[in-house]
Amino acid sequence: MGFFNAKTTWANKEFIPFKLCIASIYIIVGSYFHDFFQNYYVPLFIVFAITVVWTVYLWLKKRA
Image (cartoon, rainbow, N blue to C red; front, top):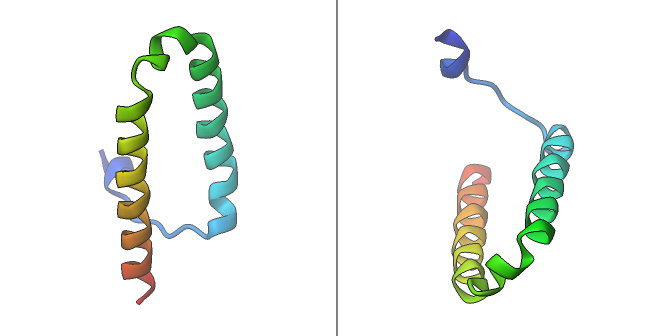
């Protein structure tokens, strides 16, 4: 269980593969289930906007 409790620091460039991985699976899932997600565009955009603001806030707080 020590693997899940390990604390590491990551540089921004080290997150590039991770971000590309997440983005590619989002595109695949979104294109496959297009008709299903079409009904939920507004709630998804709201969640996206909230999480973007939250993430930027946490990032700025960490840098200060």
